[in-house]
Amino acid sequence: MTNPISVAIVGLGTVGTGVAKLLLQHADRLKTRSGRDIQLRRAVCRDLSKPREIELPDGVLTDNWRTVLEDDDVSVVVQLVGGTTTAREMMIAFLKAGKNVVTANKALLCEHGEELFQLAREHDCTIAFEAAVAGGIPIIAAIGQSMTANQIRSIEAILNGTSNYILTEMLSQGRTYEDALKQAQELGYAEADPTMDVDGTDAAQKLTILARLAFGTTVSLDEFPRQGIDSVALADLQYAAELGYRIKLLGVAKVVDGHLEMHVQPTLVKQDRPVAQADGAFNIIAVDGDAVGRTWYTGPGAGQMPTASAVVADLVDTVAGRTRLTFPLLDLWGERTPLPVQAPDEITSRYFLRFSMEDRPHVFAEIADILGRNGISLASIMQHEASESKTQAGSRPMVPVVVMTHRTTRGRMQAAEREFQQLNTLQPPWILLPVAD
Ligand code: HSE
Image (cartoon, rainbow, N blue to C red; front, side, top):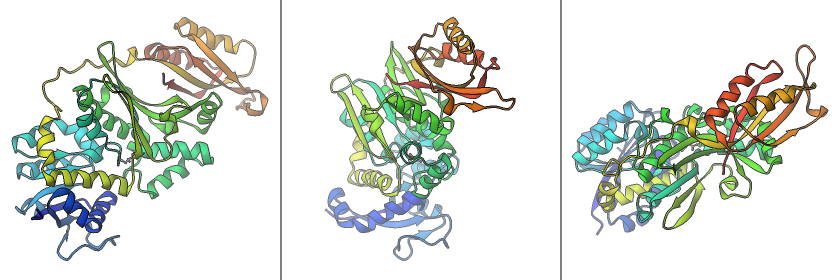
């Protein structure tokens, strides 16, 4: 029942340290749940001299990942190295050496998943990746196993904790974008380089993994629209709130007329919907299946212990032999016919448009004319007077205006936007955000 098994952690950063803590603190429960005595044989770090939050048993800490590779007793590797170059090289080596891998690296799976999953199968190994999407929320298990009876119709999700934390703090606490980002980094939510958190790349990488699982379709990042929260100002959050919406960095993957529509964008969501109510570093994933209907999964989507929780669950599944059964059946690159990806110009939505406009007669008529000529119908217009007017160089009075449109295509909206750029009565930046159905 409790014969020992040696495991290694490669990458002793925020999450790796959390995993080591759980292995040491919860050894008894993990032994019961896995049926094996899980022994941490090696923990690979970059810098041996760095102070650590945990005390590891003698001889465990090393800065040479090849000691793990060459140790035949280590049969499971928890690989928590970021990036796609060294991380790919390591994973290939571990799989070729017949070691099962647990990873949280969504960038690696998004970019090289097909190659790595194929290699794992060839070498009779498994890759477990629950922690790669939505931190501590068991969404891979939900879509990969629990919803097997369903054809998934749509996924609508907040998948980046850092962005959600920043948007929440800006609106609720009046904090600046920079201040909220700094705090998200200190709390361990953000990536080492937070650019990919705030420009939408991290959420898009996670969405491609979910889309692969749910729809059997591989979509590369350049095939669908991606925009981050770095383009959103406090004024947008406030105007959206005035209209009854929250702005969330929303990832959507859904089947529309036989096509897979995907996008990651700051999006207005009605404030009473569950997705609008996931605040702070929480993630939420709404999954609509044809048998079960709409389901929601929510919880901490970033941070040391939530992510370590998912990693350790994968480790226990691997040690207990469960991934050996489930991994080959995930149908990640299998029999299903991929869906064609919806062309970005054809994606339809309502839109929120904010701009500063010169405050004089007939200016709004020019805007309405551009929208009208592009077949875009106005749903509402909001203009606040004097107190929020700004005076630009040359003393032209400017006034902020928010327009909500009826449903139109992204192509038409972008054509209108190009025409706005020619108007000298408008002052950039103008903001254009979709509104969720
Ligand atoms: N930086 C990520 C986030 C952590 O903020 O969601 C989990 O991938």
